[in-house]
Every structure is written in structure tokens, then in C-alpha cells.
Length: 384
Image 1 (cartoon, helix red, strand yellow):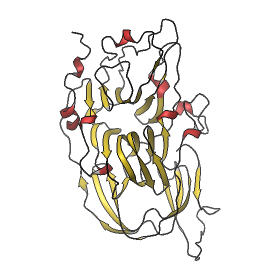
Image 2 (image 1 turned 90 degrees about the vertical axis):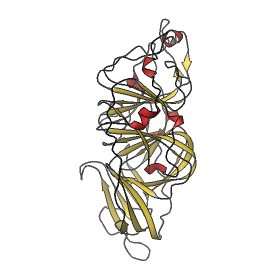
Image 3 (image 1 turned 90 degrees about the horizontal axis):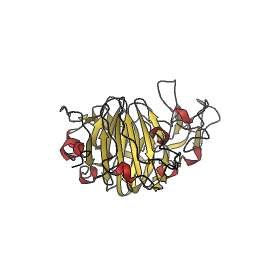
Image 4 (image 1 turned 45 degrees about the vertical axis):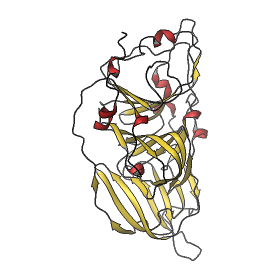
């Protein structure tokens, strides 16, 4: 995670007696990555965090065994909806590979259960609406344009939802700030397009010490399983460490510009094993007198390029709308559609807002994606 945080009440030393007012002890939980060799947090519970009362059957995901050819693709995700009342335990998966899964979801009602992803770290981009992210680490208010990073193992739910729609990236590796923007101590450097001041961490509220039946739906690689605990999972009185959920607003990303067109890496916002995430935000265009602001045609021979078009006008594309997703696979050149390259000359700025995910292994579309895509998108460079 970005930096050390301490919330609530903690003892002066780890692994020592920490007493409540009634002289009973709090229960320490170590939550760690890669065994004991990576990021970790120590959390202090009123009750033992192991009190499982009932276990449900593993609900396996349906396998999408269909194989589809490699081509440029476009889907208008406004037209597809999550299942009624399914919440974020059911995502409309559109693309995946060995490293990531990419989905969209919408939520009109408060989640009636708690959720934990045991197999993937999550990056949630809020497209529309707002919600309160409640977790065992505390609360974060989510608004349009927020990126929420949720490490695997965090217990959470969304409440106070208001027409909430989002893009979700699930990663088999931790999601972090870009390595090239950090010094050897992990601090974001001066040339980074955002800094620690822009990062929002959870607000830890009073612990909830309740007994009853509290369902946590846990997502694994192959399905979701329900666990019912007899104590509320948000009974933490304090925690400290480097493992916690956090958010960054896309509106706090400071664009890097130049006299000629800058390559996509200047827009990088996050990284993980096998992928990077970039943010295209409102910015001034290139200021060389002969600059062509639109991106040049490009053959990305080692990566697939997926773009989620959030808001604004997109200088290089025709036919896309808010919530559109395009996929330009490795090995096939892509670029502005006819007329957009020339049209950009002389323009001073753009008001586009988009999220780009570049993966270094091919992304496979799902049947849901293929059934709902714009079938002739690959022909959009043919100027009839």
C-alpha cells in the first residue's frame, strides 16, 4: 500500500496484552501478503475473527469455454445491466486473461451482505453515482471519478448507493502505484502525476460489537461461497500497517504534456503483474507549431489495449459514447478513425476522461461481450 497508516486504538507493542476497560483482552489479527514477507497490518478485534456459524455450498461460476478470434472490438456497456439485486458479487465479466478480469456492474440497492475477494485484488472505477464503502478498516465515501483499490481479504459492503455504476479490474497480483514514480523508500517522486496528499484512506468508526448472523460472501477463482459469522465483522478498535483499502480521484491526476504528442506511459496511474492502468484526463494539447495532437497509428505488438470511455469528447474515436469499451489487440495496428487525425491539428485542449488498461497477455472476450458488441467496429477505419 502507499504508506504507513495507524487508526483507532492500538497497543504500544505488537503481540502484547491489550486490555479492554473490563480487563478482557482484544484479539490481534495479522493480515499479511506473501506469507510474512510483504505488506501487512495488525488489527485488534473485540471478538475472535474466526467465529464461523454456518457455511454455504460453493456456487461455481459458469465456464465460458467459447473461443473467439482476435480483432478490434467495441461494446456500448450502457446497454447491458447486472442481474437484478445481484450486487457486486455478480459482475458482468467482459474480458479476462491469466492476470486480470475486467467487468462492469451497476448497483441500485444497498448490499444486504458483506463481501470479500479471496483470490483477486480489486480496482473499482466509479463511473456514475456515489456510495459509502464500509469495511473492516473503516469507511470511504465514493463519488464519480474515484478509483478504489481494495486488496484481497478486505471485508466490505456498499451502502447509501445512488445509481452506482462502475468498471472493475480484478488482479491476481497486488495493485500499486507505478514503480517509476516512487523512490527507494516508496515515496511518490516530484514528477509523479499525483502524490500522497491525493490518496484517501479509510475513516475508522466506532467498532460494532453485535451478535447474530452476519453473512460474508467470499469470492474465489472458481465461485462464491457464503460464510455466516456470529459476530459483526466490523468490531475492530484499531489497526496499523501498510495493508488497507484506499482511493484516488481521477480528477486529482495531473496530466503530463509536451510540445509534441506524449506516449501513453505518461498517463500511467497503477500497475500490477502483467498490466498497467492509465488515466486520460482533461489537458492542454501539444504546443509545437506543427504538432498533431491525435495519437499516431500504433502497433502494440506486446500488449492488448482496452479503453473505457468515461466522459467527454474523444478526439481519436468515432462512434463511441460514455461507458463504451474498445479493445485493440496486440499485433494489429490501430489509430484514429478517418478524419480524426487531421481534425485534431490546431486544437488546444481536450475534455476527455477515460481509463486505459494495457495487458501483456491477450485478453479473451466473454460470450456476454461478443453478444453485445458492435459487430462492424473493425471496419471503422475503412473510409467509404
